[in-house]
Image (cartoon, rainbow, N blue to C red; front, side, top):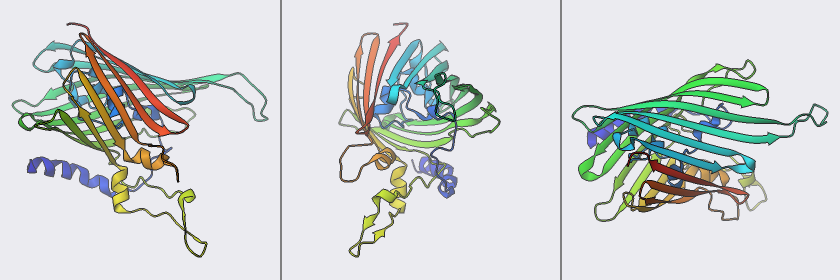
Length: 341
C-alpha cells in the first residue's frame, strides 16, 4: 500500500507546479462532459468504475474488461438551451483471457442559431455539432492486479461553415486490491492535436489528468470514491469581483485564495449505496462546480448530483440529476443491454 502511494505521488508531483487557468482555452470541449448517468451522479468525474457497463471505458480505458462483453450502453443528455448530447459504447470479447475491444461514440448537437450579418440583419440559420469515435483496449499485466488501457479517438467538429478534425488518445492505469475491495486509477485524457483547423488557428485539446481512489466498506454495502481532477493545472481558482467583502470603512477587500481552497477545487467526493446489487443509489459533490456556480446569499446546491440504477433481467436503467444553477440543471438517462444473456 505504501509503494502504491509513492507511485501515484511520484506521478502527481510535476502537476503541482503548473499554474494556469483552463477555462475557454481549448477546442472540442464536449470531450470533458460526463458520458453517462453513473458518472454524472458521482460528481461527473470518476475513473474508478470497473463494472460491466461498457460506457465506463470511455472515461478510463484501463477499466475495459470481459464482463463488459456483448453489452451495449446508450445514454441521452438534454443539455442547456436546446443542446442535446448522446453517448454509446459496446465491447466485443473473443477470449475471456482479457481480450476485449471497446467501441464508443460521443456526440453533441448545439441546435439551430439565427444568423446575422455585421449590421444585425437576419441571414440564414446555422447549426453546430461535434462527434468523437473511439476504439480502446486494456491489458492485465500477468500475475498482477495492474491494468493498463488506451483509447484512440477520431474527432469531427462542424460549427456553421467551419470544420475541424482532430485525433486524441486516453491513457489509463488501474490497480485493485480484491481482498480489501480497494481500487485506484490514474488517467490522462485527450492527449492529442487538431489535424485540420477551423480557420488556420491551431488550438489545443482539453488535456486532463485525474487520480481516483475507491473502496467498498466491509460491513456496509457502500462504496466511496475520491477523484482529483485537472491535476495538470493546479491553479483553478479565480477572483470574482462580485464577491469582494466590504470592510467597516466602506472599502472592499479582494477575494483571496488559499492552498486549501485550491486543493478543494480539484476534489470530487462521491458514494454509492448497494453498488453491486440490482438497485443502487448514488450521490456526488464536485467542489469546483459548486464554487464556480454558487450565488451569494442564496443556497442553490450547485455541485451536488444524485442518481440511481435499476437492473431488470437483461436491462439496466440509470438516471442522474446534477445541480448547476437555478437557471438550469442537467438530467441524463441511460440503458445498458446485455446482447448475449
